[in-house]
Image (cartoon, rainbow, N blue to C red; front, side):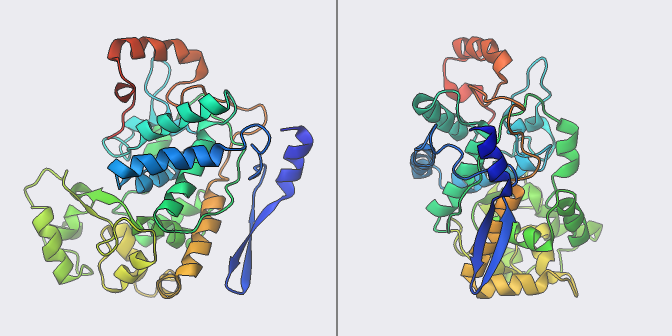
Length: 354
């Protein structure tokens, strides 16, 4: 894209309609039409790969959104999360919030291969993450948005920042607000983006303390619905290893809808970081939860606006960074990719997808 095109894109914004209200969300230096001339079918290519992945893995849509979130919260939306550990890269995949947790890297690599076949050295891995997140929402029954594009890929990672910036599931509301505010995201963004937990799964280790020993009391979380508590204890025994999975949304686990917020009304949020949005006394998040539970269209619109806003956290643009040829390695390490491929013999062995 020409420098003129970038400067014009910097002035553009998204107009997201909320009933009779319009929210203006800045695109910054990004532009939904960035690949209009250089890779016009990129959205269709991403959609095809994600659609096929969903056939065998109904969790993959939620996992792809999580990859985008975990990428953007650490030195911006630059695909640093996707870089594997090498002699020169201390991978963010090994940070505590990501280890044995992030998944879908194989699908991202399949997308990248398909995109490279159609548009070589054109589309960044950072933009692939952004598009895949939006496609995942659509394929789960949600509403899409115009994804601002034009990000480039980093050549560095920051594992220590991943340990610091990614909010864990046991955070209270004040801690969650502070974590999001550090990224330029407000309370409405926090509630809207938490709504991504309307589909997907979680390991017992992320919430087992709520079932048996909440905050060191030796008792379950008093905000947890007793019926839901008993259901979860069957899935997550006190002496278990924490690896069992359960649905983040107990009603429609594979559908992107408002039910996550309805569940909070019944004290049936799975993670502590979910339920505190509604159960913290006097919290300003409560009316937002109420509005999203009542009006699914309102939630969809706010989610889109917040995803655009999150996707604009410190992107690399112009001549910054690079367009990686393989998402798990910086281009200067492409020889390492070839060597690993020859040794392992399959693409699945190249990624740390769980």
